[in-house]
Amino acid sequence: MTENLTIAVIGAGGKMGMRVSNNLQKTGHTVFYSENSPAGQERVSATGRILTDTDTAVADADVVVLAVPDRALGAVSEHVVPQLKTGAIVLTLDPAAAYANLLFRRDDVEYAVAHPCHPSVFVERHTPEEYADTFGGIAAKQDVVAALESEDEAVRAMAETVIRVIYAPVIDVHWVTVKQLAYLEPTLVETVACMVGDLLREALHETVHTVGVPEAAARAMLLGHTQVALANTLKGDNPFSDACLIAMDYGRETIIKDDWKRIFSDDQLDHVISRMLHLDGITR
Image (cartoon, rainbow, N blue to C red; front, side, top):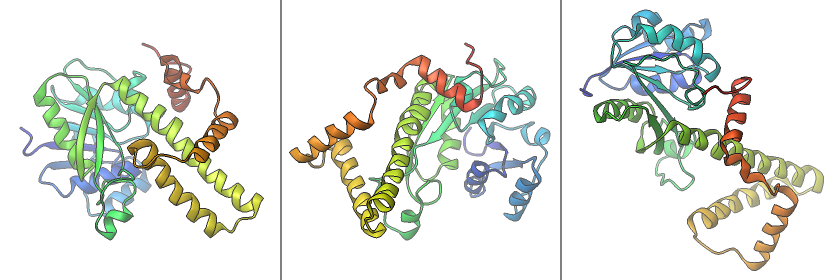
């Protein structure tokens, strides 16, 4: 069933649409590429891929990849889903819209979400291409976290076949619920990890422009110690020194709010996703 699938990519000329299309083009699957914007159409055509109108692209598709912005998924799914054949899989690339119940629903259609983990800072790399691929989907290996409403193993196998292609090379696909995936993204990796990354950028700027440390020295110190900090805390490679632990406590006291863990409550998850999607609230 999964040897040769018919796959439609809606939004094939966008950032993620181009990424997943580049990988799908390398396979033996039958793939249709749909894109509405003139700029996106130019990007698709420049690769040699043939554009197909959306209605034709989805008519016989086994899997439809909605590679469009979260805020557009409601309107796009409302147009696309009624045209799908029974048993087709609607695959979105981010959990926010699925969690917020924005997708047009049909009982005889399957729904899946799959989001890349991106190559780990600890992943083994060997070639220049692997070192250069920080986002994933080109050369460096990455994991994927996915959610599927159906418990049908055949449906999961079909979805995983496509997921492993669009995010290749993939180490493993971890299956969770839509809600769990939403806690991973945005809460864990955007609200926390990406925010901390931007905080590091701001701290580097202050070190250079306020304190006056030469930028090359500050950047070298920060990047190396970021690796050590992650290895020590997430892998347990080496214990921090007593002095470092004191400095870490000072950092928590001065930077982190005491109640910061409330972001892992359902009401705060609803709140941040509503803000991201510009919604007044989430309806269950």
